[in-house]
Length: 134
Image 1: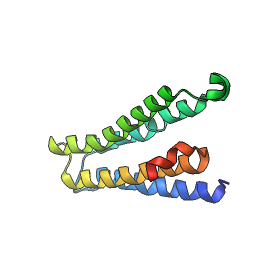
Image 2: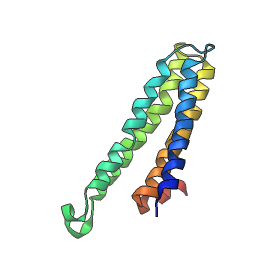
Image 3: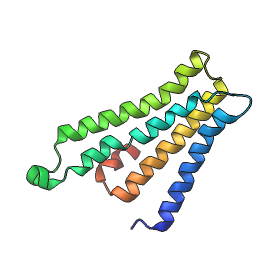
Image 4: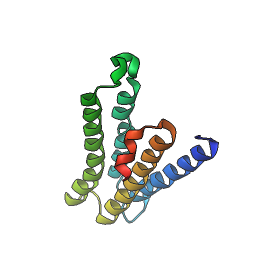
């Protein structure tokens, strides 16, 4: 189902989002590398869901992963994503970065998180991801 073409498109899409974050840091008009800290959130965001999916039916019998564990992992993922959006706002409000850099980082965040969501929908085949897209 998920082939090489999907992987190439996802990597191209992720590079566009990362380009926006790097441009928000590297452009002469903005001149601050603080927005690069959102890359930590890109690395952390899939971790709770991978932990939840790693626990299979053999670990819990026929019931699959516990519902409480799945909900906690969704909560942690949501907290990581919200933190990735809050950090540029806090940096811009405190005057560490400019508001234009904040806008570019927010657009890059949206692009990268949609790419991560697409990765989970394509490669993980989890039916629970569909409710997030509507």
